Length: 110
Image (cartoon, rainbow, N blue to C red; front, side):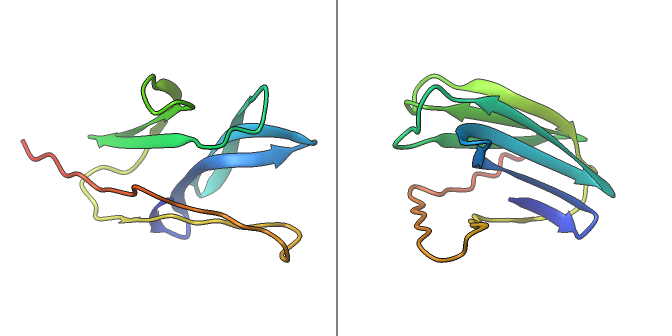
């Protein structure tokens, strides 16, 4: 999740939608919009890469950790500090398990 405040944030990951596993990205700038890419199966792992350049965030995903494809390109306010981290939730609460590994941040300065 990338978060500026309660009105400006992006979350991305895997969601279960109508019984199908989907890659998901929700972009909120006062109002939220949501896009999904249905998956053929429940992957054991998914890799996500968010890259912020100027006033855009590019969201890429991979199911093998090698080949990445673009999931979404979204506007995000430039030149402001943001919070970034991992998150998980479950509509049923009990019985949900999530595992995060190899989380890293890289800042590239001009």
